Amino acid sequence: MTRQHGQIGQPVAVAEGLSKTFGTVTAVDSVSFEVRPGRIVGLLGRNGAGKTTTLRMLLGLTAPSAGRATVFGHPYDELPHAAHRVGVSMDGIGALPGVSGRRDLTIWAKTLGLSSRRVDEVLERVGLGDRADRKIKGYSTGMRQRHALASALLADPELLVLDEPATGLDPDGIRWLRTFLRSLADEGRTVLISSHLLAEVEQTVDDVLIIQRSLRYSGTLAELTDNGAVRLEDRFFSLVGNGNESGVGAHA
Ligand SMILES: Nc1ncnc2c1ncn2[C@@H]1O[C@H](COP(=O)(O)OP(=O)(O)OP(=O)(O)O)[C@@H](O)[C@H]1O
Figure: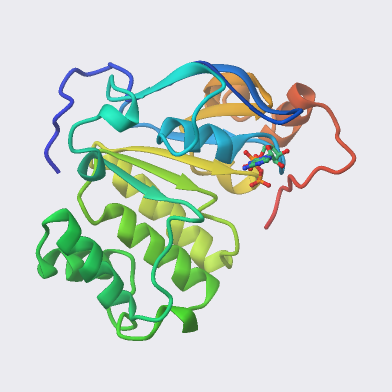
């Protein structure tokens, strides 16, 4: 990985008063935060709390109703080499179901100007090396998640934005994902993940953003949990309230 954004400590992504309304629904309400370099950052919230909408605004996929989002100091749409600097795994940025995993990544690699050797590297890295010649439509949920991560990692990006990467994974997959995300951060990358799986996140992230339309917390996991003395789940509910229709769980 080449570190193009050299200044240590300068935020990798910034949201300033980000808001989004869909008709009469306020999905995201004046959310501000900074994502620091080299950290694994968990964007946490219930189903419908505004996580995906926030990530989409950061990535220029949804226009904010108010406020501003920047990645490496630029609105995503104006970021030079954006597809090389930011790797994304998100529903709707999908793989081609009718082709093999290897073929799908090869097509994407060509678009990015990368060699097929890089495809083999990322397939090995996500543990799909021996299964990459199967069609994606036959993949299990876990394989699809791994394929999406391979795709996000293909261009060797500095920032990975992963929407719900743990959802649908079995215990082996969750454990693997935790180690995988840490290895990405150890390489100096920044990882922004959204999740509603608090128990998993508690073992994975450095920093936490809690959202319930508005931002309820932004800071380190250690501060939030008093260095592990208090469970993340307890802090979470004290910050967002006990909703009846909560989809948030301590387990998958
Ligand atoms: N394109 C859209 N049109 C209308 N409403 C939308 C649209 N996208 C999101 N919403 C609404 O905005 C709110 C926030 O949705 P969002 O998908 O951002 O939440 P989320 O935290 O990612 O939820 P989940 O965990 O269920 O994926 C929800 O009420 C949702 O129904």
